[in-house]
Amino acid sequence: MFARALLLATIFLVLIPLGPALAADLTIAVTGLRNADGLVRLAIFDKASEFPEGEELKSRDVPARAVALTVRFTGLEPGRYAVAMHHDENGNQQMDSYIFGIPKEGYGFSRDAPVFFGPPGFDRAAVTLPPRGLAIEIEVRY
Image (cartoon, rainbow, N blue to C red; front, side, top):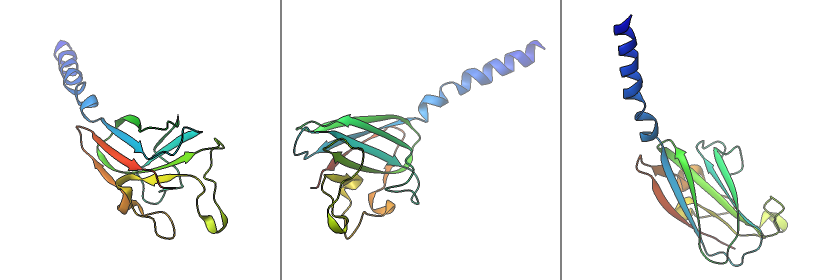
């Protein structure tokens, strides 16, 4: 009985350090905001089928600033992720657009993935998050 309890305690103590070691931070610097109006909306996707308008893994809305803005997402598993952001200048929680879907508000993607007649695919925007974490920059396009 004592040996079994000792074995379980040893396994527990060995596995505790593995939890935080499998979590990484993704730090996103957003540059090129034209004003401090509204919110900057960021969404992280781990599934190609959902990027960029489906169900995100994590998201955050932060007040816009007229200078560079940095947001950190913590506790992510190392892997491939794509980030979509938009500057929701009027704070209505949606991307406003002109006729034919041309955006009225700023937007951007990880790896500054190019936009040709619609958003980029997951593979064009995806970054690989290593266990030590990663810092990326997204330049806002208007």
